[in-house]
Image (cartoon, rainbow over all chains, first blue to last red; front, side):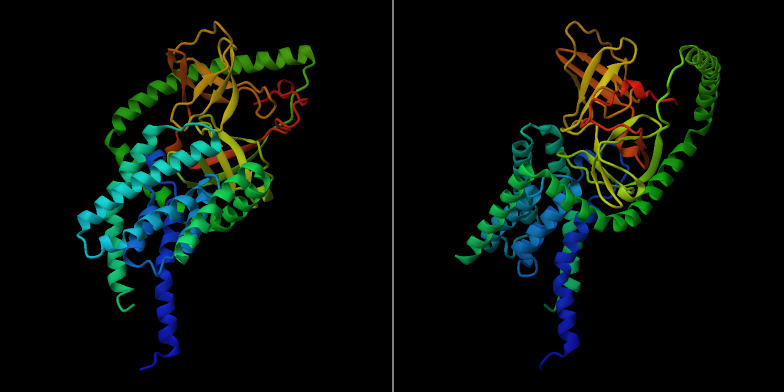
Length: 171
Length: 276
């Protein structure tokens, strides 16, 4: 049966949600939470989304969309333009190259994979910032931010998996 | 493979943007200002419940030690009353002496108050977005303060949002003096919670607890805004604990003292002393 116009619109809208959610995570990450000491080590939510969708639905969050999300992150966070864009695209590329490995693996493996990818991403962000500003920033803060990001990952991954099974179920 | 070239193109584009940002800050800042302006209304809405929730938590926590707090506040109030009496006497004396000297006071500062709508956080950049902008008369380089002290300076200006570089940011350099000894120094952020004092004159003596205020040199800030206290001195590193806590920032004031900023250093900041 040929899908009707509205069915096609519905699918189109659903297909757009991974990108939309990633952009929302970029914006939500900017909200001041007023938790003492939290701002310096706030988890990098969009990175988790980039990783998650690269494993499960790379067709819905292509590299160009990842690049755009990175640019928005750069613009809002005040980092030099291009830093997060480069980091997100490289993360996407790294995960895509291991896509077959991740297929059907348990969550623990996916989490372990994220801990490695995030380590690379934070190190790269640190190096690019050092390069652009020609100065070393605190390694300690970057490390804590990495730990927080890895620690929060299961929570967001759970939400994204729920989303995938409900909203994107028939896609 | 085509996708490999696609990745390469995107990564190269990102690096090109970094280079462009290094070479031409004006264009990039304008782009950034437009993007933040576009997202500012959304952030202004989302940051409200977060702030309200935070206030609820703080209030609930405060209920527990009300009695203790009350006693502490009563004691503090008594002490402050003594200070008030001293301040009144000094203010009177000051006006009388100024009248004797025929002192020309600086312009009255103008304020723009804005809400903190974004604190992007992260280990690499220390900046916040404030819901005020060009339409409110904010310009680049102005000082941003709270009741506690100096927050930072205006770094990028959009129509309805401004980016404030905090004094703890890697790129922040603020001319300061030690309040008691008038020793000059530069307060340099390094993306940690405790900025350092650099370019001290040889033989300068610092002790933990010494108050640091802006010096007004360089013409970007007026003198006398409280910045912080020396928290640790020794082994070549003098760290400062800022009065302003980043996580407590909710409303901030952008202050227009009518100074031209570092671009026009002939406009002597010392002459434009703040009158309140």
